[in-house]
Structures are given as structure tokens and as C-alpha cells.
Length: 327
Image (tube, rainbow, N blue to C red; front, top):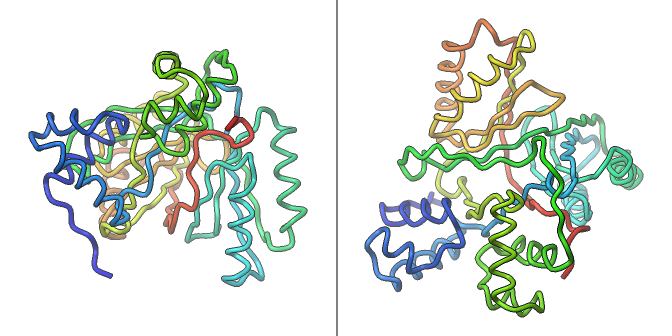
């Protein structure tokens, strides 16, 4: 299947959706000087083509008291049918937010939302009880901050704004209405206000006020399209960086360096498997290694090593634990 090509108008629409996927069709149309009908048609076509997989609401789970545990699995004695079975099982677990297929020493990584290590262990024990015989190797890491960046490489833009989840923060005071609204937005960030109002059984003004409050308090960090870069001819890689010694100033400089790279879409700080890791979307391995050579030119004497992994497919991406949703 040939890669799908985007023209300048498609890229402009995607850029403004990436900035705020909840903004109206008329707002986007005004910014790019097209009619509402044309913008609406193009968005629907991007969804139909599979370029836009869904519209995500980025929620800072740390504000809800959750810790992000990232778990890597290497399989053994697993055929395609068994892998599909394991993937289906992992996606069904209420505490699992991400399920990603990899091509490296590990086959899958998942993200588990848990309020403490004991809650994490419950989910972990459930997984090992059900499929532990198929796990040859398991690695657990703790994500302390996960940062999102605009897909500048795709839009030919230089917008280096950042949306981060995690970090030190005060717990938010939320009620059932807030959780219900977030649960609806998690399924589709572009759900119309009236639809949210009916589903949450509150007035449209209440929904509008609650959303505005959650955005102001940093609980809802943003709304964006989940773009299938592979259908556009791009490969998705994650790179793990290990520093020779712990140096927060150096880590900050590397972070700032990566932040202004147009191909970098995520930067993660975690405990375990590297001091810093980042994700890039590039045309091929050659382009990836060109970026890594530049990284070495700037920081090579401070790097102990770096390791790359190909992200084959994101099976699940959700920022709100299913066990917190009230629908």
C-alpha cells in the first residue's frame, strides 16, 4: 500500500488540531482561510484514511494521585495467535493506559496507572499469573515526567511548545461530575459540549465551567489528534540515553537540545532503563542515525551509551485509568 500524501492544507489543519483538537471547525477555517465545509470534509477524510486514528485528551494522572509504571516484556514460546491474545488481555486491564509493540530486546511495553506500589503489584501479579510462562524477561521502570511536542516535522512548523504530565504536583479535588466529563473526553476529545452534557447529566454551562477549571488547574493538559505516522511513510523510534554520571544541569541541556528537534515528539524522564529517553518519527533508520550523530557531536563525551528501539504499533493510548472513569 502506497503512503498517503498530505498537501499544505491538510498539514495546516493537522497543525491547528494538534494545538487544540477541541477548537471549532469555523475557528480552524478562519485561521487557514478556507471555508468551514472544506475544513470539515478534509478532517473527515483524514479520519477515513486512517491518518487521524482518534482524538486524545491529555490528562495529568499525577494530579489524580497516579504514578506511571512502565513495564517491558520479552516473550518466549509465543506465536502470532498467542501474542494477539496477550495484547487483547493487556488492553482489557483497567489500570493499563498504553500498550505498545516493539522491535528490540523487548516485544511489548505497557504503562500501568497505580496510586502506590501495592496497587501496581496487584495488576502486575494478575498479568504474571495469567501469562507469566510466556514472559522470558520483564523490566519495570517508573516514569517521573512525560512531555509531548507538536509534530513539527510533519507540518513544517517551528512550534516548540510543550505539554507535560507527571512531575511534582498537588492532588486535585474532583467529584463524580469531573470524572464523568473526563471519561467522556478520553473516548473522544472532540465530543460536542451538548453530547457531554447529556451523557454526564449536567447542564452545558456546568460542563463548560468544569472543563475550563480542569484546564486551568493543569488536570487536562491538552487535546490532540492521534496521528498514524506510519501511513504517511514515517518510522517511530524510541532512544534511551544513559549518562556517564548523574548531572541535572547536563540532563536539562540535553532536554532543551532535543526539544527543538522537529522530529522529536516525546521526551520521558524515568527511573530505570536510562536517564532520559525520547521518541522520534523519521523516514528511515538512516535519518534516525543522522540525528544520533548530531547528538553525539554535542554530548558524546557525557554519554555512556544510547539504545534505539523501533515502535511497531501503538495498540492502546489512554491518559485516564479506566478504573477512575464513571460512565
